[in-house]
Length: 103
Image: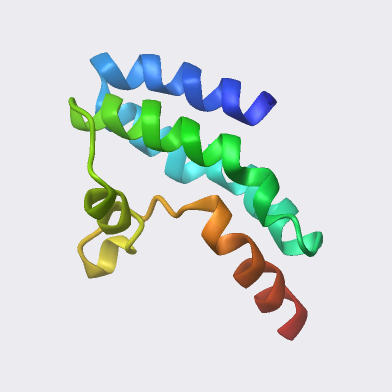
């Protein structure tokens, strides 16, 4: 619930300053749950409310309109490949944990 509130607050900032909100998200906020994803197995479904906040509030705030499912998928692509690097926490949770086990 705290992370959802943080995304909602950042969404409000994103309406007026999308670049600052995007930077704050990619440089700080998203790393909070990445750590949890890498250390606790089988929790992907718990990230549903967070993905909803990203999909329904944050991304529309920084883009300036509602987004389609295809755009959501595109925005999750890494920046070096043309996306925004805003991954879907539900979809990447299991992968993050598996990657951490290999280290």
